[in-house]
Each structure stands twice: as structure tokens, then as C-alpha cells.
Length: 228
Image 1 (cartoon, rainbow, N blue to C red):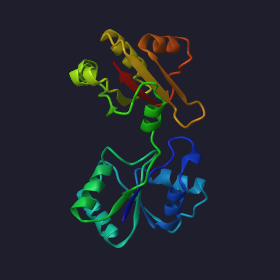
Image 2: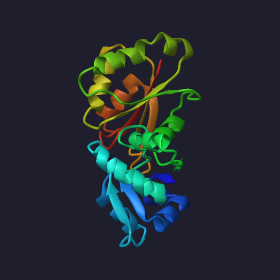
Image 3: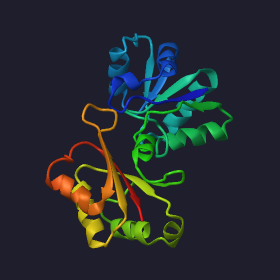
């Protein structure tokens, strides 16, 4: 069995009892960053001296994946991201694919991500929503933004779109939305689960004013929601 184990995105108290029990029981842990996982176990006072930490990145070779497969055939293994839930993007999907192709059971533990708290914390109806991960940094960025704002499906059904945005590009995003004439609602969530977390939902102009007044600091990682 392969266990996908979520870890806190900021507040160490967000760990689950099930995750802690697995950290204690499992001998093998596949990690996005082995050093981070070791620090995590140390923080929860879990002895890790007898555990084996295996690295998994987007550069992991097929030979190493086959080695991990052999371990999975004989052992329960935990897969741990640096923070949050190991889920939508590579290299975690490579492990899902590996398990499916070789009839290896796997279990994805719930919670520990910024998206769902941001969706719940937005003030507009989000019983349905579209999730886009990160916007492109350069190539394709304007095309993606225009798709978000101009989609006839979203216009008809008013389905909000949520995505992550880097602290380095958040102000650029506000400027781009202004230039494209966005006049809907925007939800901004930052530093979720941390000491200075903040969630606001207003018009674009009101969000821009909050930034200018430094009531919405440009710090941390952002989850942005847009609704026409």
C-alpha cells in the first residue's frame, strides 16, 4: 500500500493523527525533499533513525521508479510532499500511474492544502468551481487570462475560477486584470494557516486599494478566485 500523506502548509498543529501514526509505523518514506521530511519527523518527536528516505522529483529516473515499485510490492510506503497534499502535479502522478499499472493499492489521506480553505472563504457561491493550478509565468499567460474572463460557459453559469499566484506576480496580475477590463468579484487568500493569514473578497478596484494602503501585504503565497 502506498499512502499519500499530507503535511501542514504553515501551522504545525494541522497534522492529522492518522498521518502521525503512519509516520511512526512506516519504514519507507518517499519524499519531495528528504531533509524537510526528517525535520518534520523531528518536530513531532518521531524517531526516524531506522527509516529509509527515498527521493522523488521530476528528474527521478525510470530505473529508480522501478526500484520503488519493488519496495512497494513487499512493503507499505508513505509518500510525503514538502508541504501540503501530494496530489495534482508531477512527480506524484507518476506514482499513481505506477500503482495503477502494477495493481498496487494506494490511499490518499485528506486535507492540508490551500485551495479548499480559499474556496470556502470566498464570499461568492463556489458549489461549482474551476481550478487552474498556477497561471503561466510568461508564454500563454495572457491567453489563459482572456479564457478565464471571456469563457461563454463561465459567463452563462457564473462558475468561479481559482488558481495559485506567486507573491512576485500578484501585483502584475491585478494590473493585467485591470487592463483586460475585469469587473467581477475577486477573492484573495494568502498565508493560509499561518500567523498572518488573510482572506478578502471584493471588487478588483477595492483589492487594488487595499494593496496601495498596505492593508493587503504582498507577502506569502496567494490563492486567487475570480467570478464574473
